[in-house]
Length: 390
Image (cartoon, rainbow, N blue to C red; front, side):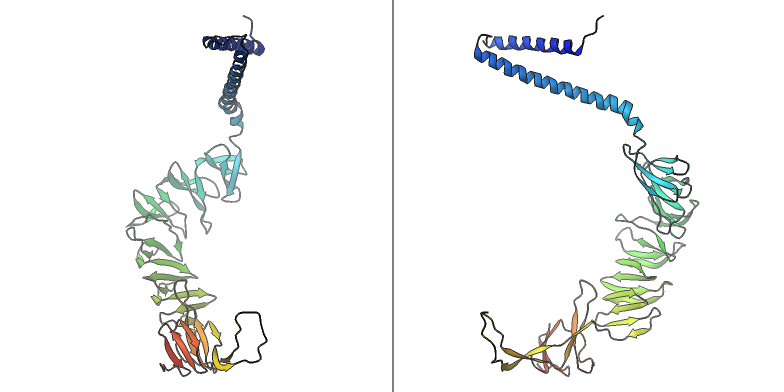
């Protein structure tokens, strides 16, 4: 049987199409001798030709993609690495170019250690075990050998910290050791929103699964701070708590240092600064001894308008010319910052000897005379002795 060439195939194909076009157009009365009929036939034939070329191109593209690429090209590119993350010196987690099947790989041995891995996370303290996810479950691998240390049997799992890791299994929050043995089983449950579990200085933060209130447990799973705080975190070794908008502080041994009744607390450079609700502030050392009994953040001079006017002002094109004479008030204004974005700054009066005249109880102070000051929010007038005169 003789083979048909591409040229013969397309000649026969287009010849047949042309005869079909002539027959269809003949039904509508168009004849070859008619000039208009010839134009219509040629346009119609050109459109059909273009459509056939597009159809042929689509067929060839589908064939190349589904058969040629998938069967002959892609198998040679499946092992191409898109990105890799080291989890130890020679063990890496690799994301692949053309596959969702990521893997754990040994760079020294050039060997795949674990396939179909979704992700791997190493703990901040570089624990020997790293948590991984595969097939919708969580487990742990030894990041130095790449071998599975604890199989993926958990619904959720968190990194190891201080030798313990939190896991969720059958709806319960448990804590396990490096062998996978459960060491804390106290009927805890995972809080639904952004759950994080890690031990810090022997304690782990746990949230009430109902209202999200925070507390601390020790390594035995016992409560050392009940879950009653809105916010809780480790601050330079101290545990800072917040409840109903007020802030407190516990030592690393869980001794109460400042109850949760302050506006703000800052811990930095061996100093603890406490902002009280009466708008004053003090600084303490790490043992709770007072270092600065009264913190002042800024001091300003205050000007007031006198009854005199300047008569040596030069003419100006400006519509407004201030020819008033100002004096400097006897007292200065000092400020104690609120400490947080939702706490206002407060002001008080300070005499020229550096003595406190009024506590920082005013939202603003304006000098209206050499020894008189308008103080808000009460709208009272205070003299330079701190007494309300009006």
